[in-house]
Structure formats: structure tokens, C-alpha cells
Amino acid sequence: MDTKIIQFANINAIDTANLSEKTKIQYKKALNNYLSTGNKLTDANALFDYAQSLPTSSKVFLKAAIRLVTAGYEQNLKSNATPDNLAMVQAALLRLESLNSTIKVNATKGEKVHIWLSQTQVKELMHTCDDSLVGRRDWVVLALLVGAGLRREELINVQCNDFIDLPAKKNKTRWVLQVNGKGDKNRIIPISAVLATRIKEWCLFVNQGSIARSLGQSKALGSSLSAIGVFQIVRKHGAMIGLPELDPHDLRRTYAQLGYEAGRPLTEISKLLGHSNIATTQRYLNLELDLESTVSDFIPLD
Image (cartoon, rainbow, N blue to C red; front, top):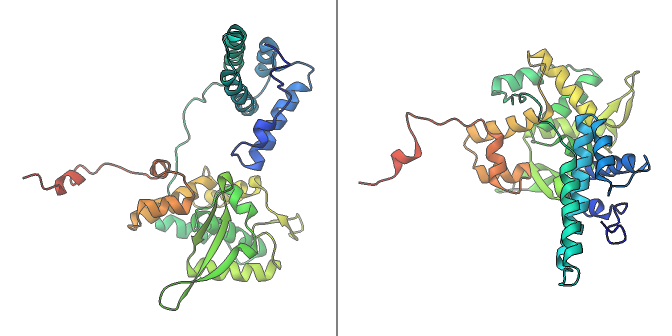
């Protein structure tokens, strides 16, 4: 493959991809770590040997980064193909295909069982938070996951000034969160009066800035909480109600599930979650077929 045509050190494809900044950083790091070995991404054998030494998570990032970088070059090669350079283009495309298949990521055995909390379990979870500073912080973190359906990345980035009061019907108002979500998509999430009150109190205490805050060993209020910190809080309180494997995303799924069970339209739930299509939302739900009564029973065919 002609490296004058394909400059693999150029990672602009990652910069312009529709990904979160955190993911872009991981992809760039994976590529740079490989390139720092002195090998080229055009060397499939060296790439294979290097990938074999990596843990699964690192392989996943490297494989995804290479897929992004090569995709742009594939399109460029195809669009510039002529009868005179067809053989070279075909050879280059085969090399690109080979690079994308070089790194093998074995699927993990088994699959994590998703958890959906009942309303009773949500109440139990929230009651594990006491009135201490840690307890108040943890309550806000858990409530934004299960009560607003935020992703971890959205939670750690949401600010007190993203929490606003908007006019509603009948001269009433509703507190909402303005969230910058996955793919840099903005959305508004109406929240309950209980959650709104607690967030107002918390933001007055932390004096604006990030809502989800870290706490030092001396329990002094710090800067924004990390994604790992959110995970640890959920695991800690999950264990308190007998669910030590509870994940932040399980609380987001619970938000969707309880809303669906309460009769909220699937389209509304999908919009609140920031999903681009309803099919993604459906996968969040713990749906079982009802063999006693089903949609077909209500179609007047006779």
C-alpha cells in the first residue's frame, strides 16, 4: 500500500467522528500507543503481534480507531479509481480490509444480566442515602440516573445552570435539565418536583458549577465527579439493597421501564433518553409477550 496515498498517522477521521470527546481520546491514545512502538499501521503483521499483547478493552479501542481511519481512505480510493490506477486501488482496498480484520476481539463468555428495579426497589435504593454530605451527594447522583435517565457522561458534565424553570400549561412551571448528550445532541428532560427541590438545595450548597461533585478523603467538596466515581456510588448503594452488580446504566433502563409501565408513550421515552430511534429504546425495556391478551385480540377482523 502506498503510504503517500494513505497517511495513517493522520487521525483527523477520529476528530470529526460523531463520538464523545472521551471516546475520541481513547481512540487516539490507542493509535498513538501503537505508533510509539516504531511500527506502521500499514504493517499488518506488526499490528497483529502488538494487538496480541493487549487486554480486551485496549484491543476494542484500537480496532475501532483503525476502522474509523481506514473508512475515510476506502471512500477516497473508490471515488478516485480510474482504469489506469484500478489495480493499485484494488490492492490498497485489500490491504485496508486485511488491517481491519487483523485485530481479533473475542466475545466475553456469558453476558451481564440487565437489572430493572421495581418502584419499591427504587425507594429502597434512595433510602440508603443518609443526611451526611456523602449521603446527600450520593442521593443526587442516583436520582439523576434513575429519575432523569442520564448517561454517566451526561451526569458528570451537567451543571447547576443547566437546571432551569420553564413555563408549562395553566400558568404553571416545570423544572427541567438541559442536557448535552451523546453525539453532541441537546435535549430537555422535565424532572419531578421532588428531584427539582433536592437539586435546588444541592446547587445552593455547592455554589453552582458541576452538580455531581467529588469528595476528598476529608470529605471536602471537590470538583466534578469522574465516571468511575459514579460507577462506585451505584455499586455501593446497590449492594445495600442486595444488588452488588447494579450498574449506572441499569438505573437508566429502570427510568425507561417504569415510565413505560406507567403508560408513557414509547416515543416520549425515546426522546427523553436521547435515542436516535425507537428500536434502541425497545432494547432498554424488559418486555415479555402476554399470551393471555395481545394486540391481535383487538383487531376487528370479523
